[in-house]
Length: 264
Image 1 (cartoon, rainbow, N blue to C red):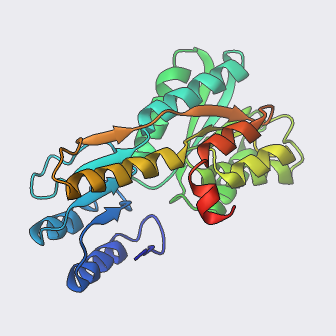
Image 2 (image 1 turned 45 degrees about the vertical axis):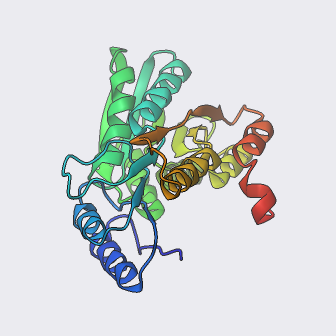
């Protein structure tokens, strides 16, 4: 069974889904938390019910033993932010004005931003504006970028800490006809981002080969079902791509398991 919440800040909705799943009775749960700390009540309930859990999109096991999951599968938000910061710094030649658009308050957004900042702040000629939280919402990211573009006529690059935020910023830049002058970055390297890069209105994104993490989830569940040790966490490599990349081979590799199964 696959369930989705209304948005990245629908913590109550995710808890209600977990309670429903517990009542139905399942063997395993894979959960992508709306937020790292906000999911703790749900994890406690699952552990109390004796249901093994894989936490997806976070690497750090929870300190609370009553909430700690069987394993954690993710691509490092901090490392992805650092790779993005390195690309941005090189693209700007070490000088320029950068805007960071945040997601929702919490670990994922903070780590992606802090990793980025840890690199770009090594360049004294790069000025950084910390933009608002956008709740990982594309429309809110578009509005935030639009407002910042109106307030600052010398922005060189937007870094959005997710796919949706990068696309929202890219759209705002495209609307004023400056996609060739102002760079826009997302996070994740999803299909929508790759299309936007090919169309020329998104500049770059750090790609996560999601199929690999899917294998990490499956391996953990199989190992547990066979009574074998399960690692505390799993992490995979990133690949930086931009609108000048030949992304076909990269995408083919990233989707090497899911494409034959899903026919896409």
